[in-house]
Image (cartoon, rainbow, N blue to C red; front, side, top):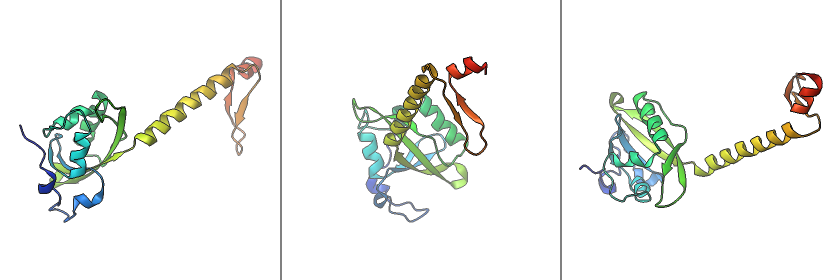
Length: 170
């Protein structure tokens, strides 16, 4: 069973001369097939906050939901530079977290330096905004009064509720 290198052995990136520990966020070198080759202390802490403190070079992938893991593998296979927010099972018994991953590809596309950004609060705000927009849409659609929204510059109708649509046959 292989383990990601400990933080002490992996704090400097020989390619760039960076001291990863000073970045303040999880960083790892990941192969195109998802194996962690090196990682900093912040990445190790991210793993420890998850289901198991013993992580193999592939165990970290199990913390993503199946959909998020598939999206991550597609990102790796396509050698993309970043991911949309990925659902991650973080702390033991804790709520679902969301991570965005930024990738800088190295060595002819066989490995990349990945930085992990916790975007949970942004994702929660986005989901709440969508839920509120849906509540507003339902409220407007069921209002007994005619409601419409127009683009101020083009005067194009952007929205008409059911009452207005029924009244004018739109």
